Image 1: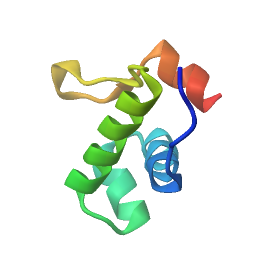
Image 2: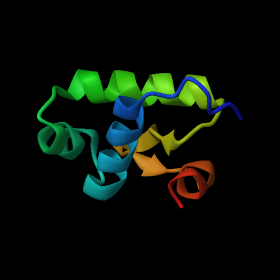
Image 3: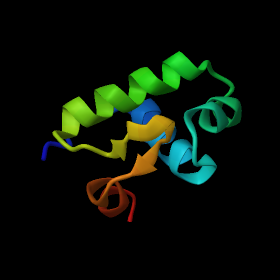
Length: 71
């Protein structure tokens, strides 16, 4: 797990997604597009080496790693 190099925008997108429960809700809360939030979340997962969300079955569900990272 690496934390140097994380951006404030990545962390804001992650927190907003956790609070809203969806990328679209996070995008609305942050006044950005859905693709921007998705990109920030993907970059955050790459930068940390963590799988933060399960995207299967058309839903975005926090993984155990995601919950611990949020926690």
